[in-house]
Image 1 (tube, rainbow, N blue to C red):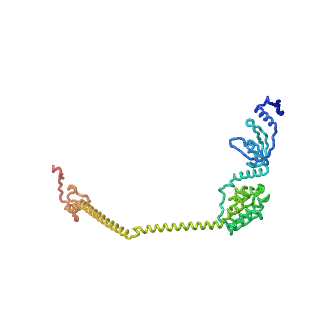
Image 2: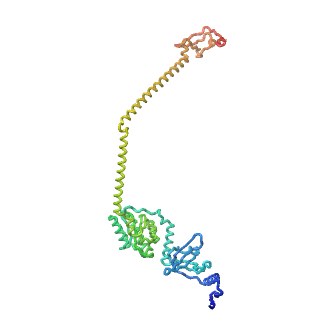
Image 3: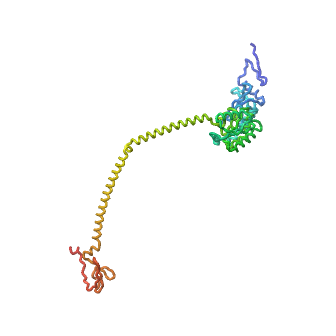
Length: 426
């Protein structure tokens, strides 16, 4: 078989069976060839987005919506963050990139230099940016959500004229509670004037003091059709409204910004009617159930109290209550008797003690000494005489006796030496 020679003329590489090129040479040749390609604009849908905090590169998978073809895209974080609006998975974008060939793995990828959302993707990206800004202001804070009344006196409804959403809310509400009252404000739910008309209708209902809850309802539609319900002015008006607001826009998969700021989000207009108006049949059943539970509880309490009373009555203290009083009377009499005996003993001891103290006082009293025949002699100035030498002949003296006094004049003073009984004995 004759040898065949092939060549890569663009890179000046010739190969043959006898002289094959190593893989690295081919890889380097492809790198050089691809490097000659200039940057291109590529349109596709973001199928996967990986943004890791520890890396400076964002990885994307760009898919062709009309074919099962996809390419890997690498984008510097600085380029990705510099986009005017953030993008998410599912958004259509146009990427300005250059083709790169990664030699170690032998893979082709696009190195993005600029990314721009287009079409619906751009709309969704702008809505996402608006959501982040309003969320940062706290307009979607769950702590600000108001509770719906159990049974509203009057329901305010903002819908399009002759719309299916109006019929769904009205019919389901009346089916659940026939007496529910509505005030309906019609507004355009699509188009340039939609947001302004909805805001005016909301303001009219909010100023009505008879309105307890407001429903904003619309059927499903494309993303472009639901844009008025992500309008910043409408979002701020709902956040400032003092009446609870229920959002019932589109279907379950639709989620305009109105759903985030409303106090309650209903998946459909029919669901809004179920959330706002209670079902009379369910409430009657609930009342009957609670009545039965109350009756059973009261019956149980009464039976328990009757059993308690029967137990108390059967006790001896209630069967023969006079015995209790007889016992207490006996105890009382015994205590009175003991008190009297104790008081008598204390009075007797106190009397004896008082007599002893009185006898001691009398024995020590100077009057008792005078009663034994002694006298207290004093000079005219009141000085008590204890020595005959204290008075001179002719002095007037007074002698105090047990009964009365004697006044005399000293005729003679006989002084005697005082005798010491102890010395005399010795």
